[in-house]
Length: 275
Ligand code: NAP
Image (cartoon, rainbow, N blue to C red; front, side, top):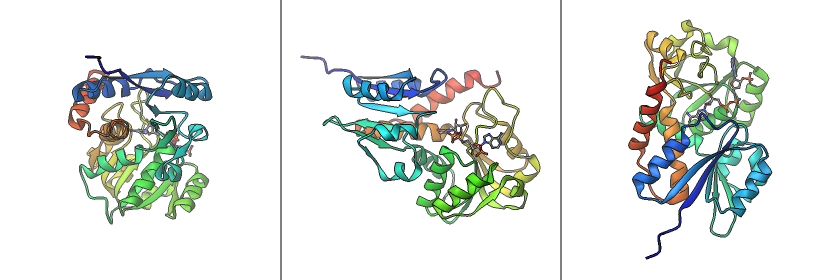
C-alpha cells in the first residue's frame, strides 16, 4: 500500500528562531497520527514567500511578527474577524489553490481567559494598542465583556477606541481605573528584559485578575507584582496553546490535544525559566 504523502505547514516571521510553535505543532501532529511537518521560515520577502506557498503546496501557514497585517494584501479572502482585527496569523491553502486568512489570536486569548473566568458583563483593561490589543478588544466584545483601552500613546488608543466603540484612557490615568481584569498586550517584561513591568506596583490592587500575554518568561515581573498585590494571575501560555490549536483545527478539521500541547510548551519554558 502507498504511504500517504506528508503534509507541510510553515511558520513565517522574522525572527522565528525563538518560536515554540514548531515544537508544539510537530508534537501535536505526531500525537494525532497525522503525517505532517511544520517548519519555521525566516522571511525576508513576503511576496516571494507567499508565492512559495502556492508553488510548493504548503497547506497552512502561521504568520507572526512583523507580517500579520502586511500579509492581508496577498490573500484571496480574509475571514471577517481577521478583517475587523486587521491582522492575519493563519493561512489556509485550500484544495482549489485559494489562500484564506484567519485570526486565531483572539480565540486563543478568549479561550485562555474562559479557562479561569466568565467574560460576560465583566470589565477588562486592555493595556496597549497594537495587534494583540486589537485581538483582545475584539474577543472581549464578542463574548459580551467591556474593554477599556489604556495605552502609552493616547492618540493610538483613541483611534482604536473610536473604531471598536469603547472607552480609552492615557496610561497616566490608570491609577483611577478599577476593573475585573487587566490584560497586558505590550511586550514590556518579555525576555531578556525580565525585570521590566509596564505598570507601577501600587495600581495593581485595582484589578481582581491580571493576565499577561507574554509567555517567556512564564512569571513576568508584572505577574509577580500582581500576585504580591493580591490579584489572581494568568500567563500567556494558555493563549499561545489555544491559538495554535485553533490553527490545527482549521488545517485538519480535527480537535487537537490541547492539554498535551500545553505540557510540551510548559516543559520547554520551564527549562529556561530563571535563566
Ligand atoms: P505591537 O503591535 O508592537 O504593540 C505593542 C504595544 O505595546 C503598543 O501599543 C505600544 O505602545 C506598547 N508598548 C511598547 N513598549 C511600551 C513601553 N515601554 N511602555 C508602554 N507601552 C509600550 O505588539 P503585538 O504584536 O501586539 O505584541 C505584543 C505582545 O503580545 C508581545 O510580547 C507578543 O509576544 C505577545 N503575544 C502573545 C501571544 C500569545 O499567544 N501568548 C500572541 C500574540 C502576541 P505605543 O502605541 O505607545 O507604541
